[in-house]
Amino acid sequence: MRKINLGKVLAVALITVLIWVWADLALDEELPDKPAVIVVDESATPKLWVSFNQDSSADVKVTLSGSHTAIADEKRKLKRGERLEFDFDAAQENLDEPGSYTLTLLPFLQRNNQIKRLGLTVKSCEPETLDLQVVRLAQNSLTVECIDENATPLKTESIDPPKVDILVPEDWSGEKLIARVFLRRREIDQARLDAVEKVPYIELAPRQIRWAATPVKITMPPDEELLADYTITATTFGFTLSANLQGKYKVVVTNLDEVLGAITIRATADAKRAYEQMPYQVILQIDDEDSRSEEPLRRELIYNFPDQYLRTDDIRLNQQPVTARFELTPLPSVETQ
Image 1 (spheres, rainbow, N blue to C red):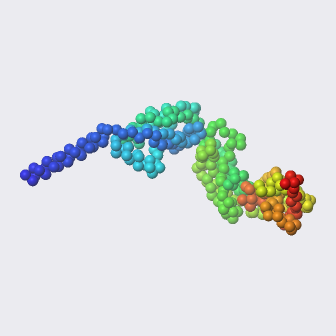
Image 2 (image 1 turned 120 degrees about the vertical axis):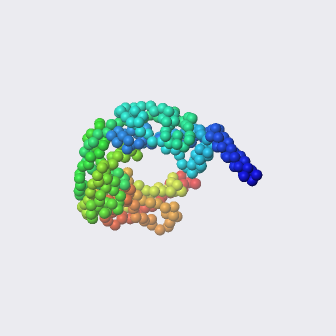
């Protein structure tokens, strides 16, 4: 009797499990607006530049259908910030000839093997289509140029080799045939002592990078060879005034000849030209306390060097800062209040 009862219990349990499994598979649930991304598989078509409006990926939203278990798993992934990723192979979609196309998304997503493995179906998507561009690339020899953190070209002592082969759009020519190497400040300093090895790249579009197959070795000239002494004349000066003083006082500089005198700097040629083109070469900072001071007002000038060259130490003052002498004269409208 025990054996018979045990067998019945096991049979009932098995039937119950099968019913639950069948119910889970039979009753589909939906998950709307699941974030997803379509990413161009560059390795599949290395001699093509395939992009969605010059971007290598496109964000979409999909409505998924599947069993309770499969949908529950996707909901957990969604809470963790995960999203579905679909690889796009232009050749597999028969879109590997140069030109512009409109990709209908739903059939593409429904054919995806990853979705099938997850036991899911894509019911709908937003947007319904994507614009696709396919450009043929050709091998070309590009001159290598080094740039700093501000995308400013750097003077180098040597680049070995001076040219590299990279796949670029067939219609590129002239100034476009330049491969760049990005050097941080520490790498620039290191390259003055010993060669730095870096891989050149081109930028097809923002965030669309293609790399050369081989690195180059870069050496930079010693610091002293880059900087030279220059004397320029300050043609204009400005002053900073807080909102508390604006419209209430007139600034009178009593030693204007010194303020607008010669300025000796040590800089690269590019930094010197940029400094000369600044709206104000020198600035006088005026504080709120100056309006209450009974002592003669004096303050060192601020030399308005361009930020991008100041950060890389490509420009510096090569003299003692000039001290401006100034007065704050109340405006008539203030005196009559």
